[in-house]
Image (cartoon, rainbow, N blue to C red; front, side, top):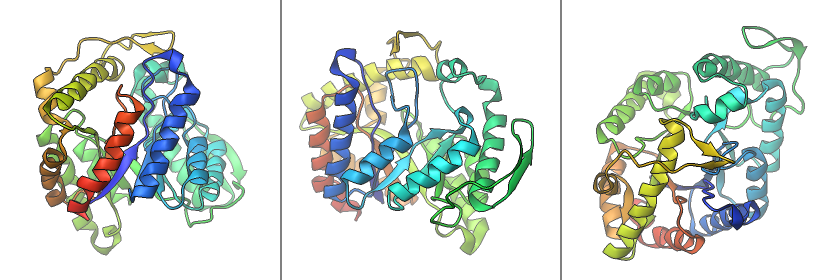
Length: 338
């Protein structure tokens, strides 16, 4: 099982400054590169202070210029917010500028507040995403592509430059629904998913759907991977563990507001609402604990055959907490799963 750091920008205090937030994320990526993590991942979100990254491909290029070997995943870029005729060229350029270390994770968008203020109705995102994905793949694999669909209509064009890898960078599909995981795997996509705050039954269904699809594909599916994203942190002791669980509980009070809640955002700052999950239940489900506790929680993941664990370490704690966790995770947890 390989490990990745999700560089999700949590920005609860405007006075901290966006420049410092992104410098923190860059420092995390450099340390992860030095310590042998497989990858770092950057997400795309706009107009709000949680998961704040309006330019993931630009940041991927910056990370590549400051690291040596680590892969850079987008987790995810939101296709319905882009014109694929422009975006295909940006993807190709980013793949060149990152020296072929880019993995393109794509999704339909998760926050109604964000999508609708960018002019995309949430109930239309599935149809727009599906067509956008088809257009993007066509532009990355073919020349003189024309289109006559519901959302795209254009005469023959060839995106330049052409990809340095056949079909462009490897593509990962962000999907939660087990049925969706099955069908996306059968289409040849790597899968990136999460049980969110820790629904173990959902996790089993997600993994089973992926494995069933791979088994049915035979040799064609052998190289496909399943990545799992989880909020996580290492704690020195029980007191430190409870401090970090409280921080995660506050984080989910903001995250749930825009993910499943009313989407209340004040001048870019997501309003914190009471977290729907009791703090004790949340603490049990999240990957927050001592190195031994985290190792024990990860053993079932390894046995399930999960290929990559993406650790979301940024949920309101300070930078030193996060850098210490990256260091300790590499030294005290990762060797058990080498």
